[in-house]
View 1 (spheres, helix red, strand yellow):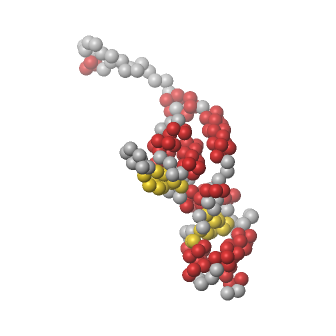
View 2: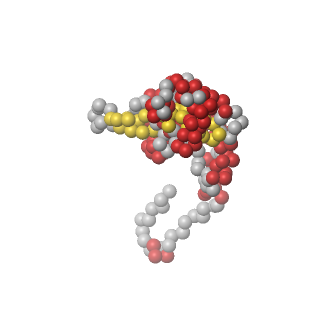
View 3: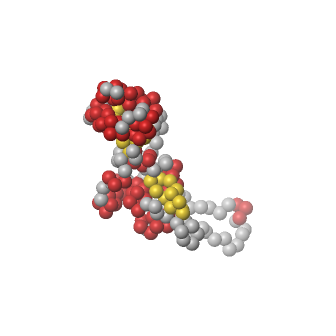
Length: 216
């Protein structure tokens, strides 16, 4: 098969698929060498790169057409009437720990973060960024968590070996968390600050009761 034809066939497959497809599967089903498909991927990455609205992304041995991250806000504005909230700093810190320490239990994540991680883990499971990878051979058989292909795709890396330095990443998240806290003080967020809460008056039907205690 000519080089131009390989590129065009792969381009068509990616467009029709929508989801990620394994390079090995494409090579096998087309009766070609994996190296030929990888060479085609490299050429298409140059075509779908830079300022192009569509990018060719690779993750976990898979390839997929996706939107240019530079235009994410505009795409979301048009396609999502109510834009989905970004992952919280707590969730980002949690998934970072799981990515570097996987497979890891919830308790081990909490020991590193120093806070309860139930909500963050549930959020990450909901977004399919992590998955149950088994159970620890210990008392209670706690669940083990690991990252998914969706995690690789979202953070645009081929595999977890491409993750940045662990300590540097956690320090960056800590700085981001501090900036967020300083930008929106908690006293400004509370809905109760807009109103003066009056002292409670004893209802008429309790006026004659003794030993009433005020709940603070």
